[in-house]
Image 1: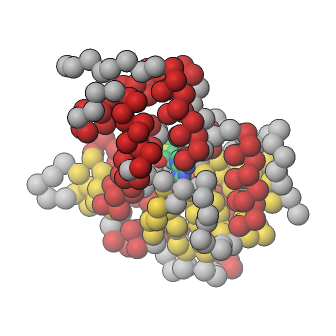
Image 2 (image 1 turned 135 degrees about the horizontal axis):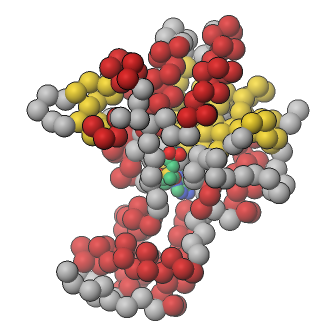
Length: 267
Ligand SMILES: C[S@@+](CC[C@H](N)C(=O)[O-])C[C@H]1O[C@@H](n2cnc3c(N)ncnc32)[C@H](O)[C@@H]1O
């Protein structure tokens, strides 16, 4: 294996500043080795021999800037991740939606490779098959979005789906060791590229927003701004779910904690 070139403190700081400006992600100084290792593959691909040359390149090359954000962000996700949220959905939210029977809109913000929105969609299909409930699933990364749209997952990944739902909503692709999400589950989900730092074209209101394990990488100021923006897009009874390792406590924002990692509007 070829050793990667040295990463100077100045170049590392410039990369940190860029990723903060573009994606809102605050990288701590101890991430230098990680950044160096992850960007080394981009340098090799582009046949560049120094991180300084790479920085020059991303100043003018938007595609490469997006590749850079891709390799520096964490996309870890899974079906039924943090299952307490899905228990709350089934036990508390869906009975209301079943009784009211009007169209519903959910936003999965930072959906990564699609396991989160498809988990939601499987539950809607299983519990409210005749209610028009749709999911908008967005992410900054084109790479994860194309995997999400493909809706194909290896055996190890689908083990997180409870057996009954797995046999109903995932189909083995002949000749391949992957399973595909069924068309009715896919049909409820639309994917779009959206940088949470930029403009949001959608008007809402949303009946549920999930932004889980995304804001953990952002500064307090960015998380405050986002929480306020989410609050403005939530319908009256709706909630925001964030990751259980995250918190909006101590931020000047209008949502109130009603369950671990679940926030409602204050009015
Ligand atoms: C760790 S994954 C979380 C996936 C899923 N929500 C979950 O909890 O399993 C974080 C995702 O946030 C996305 N992300 C990071 N910064 C973003 C930004 N500024 N705008 C939109 N998405 C962003 C990443 O691309 C990544 O796919």
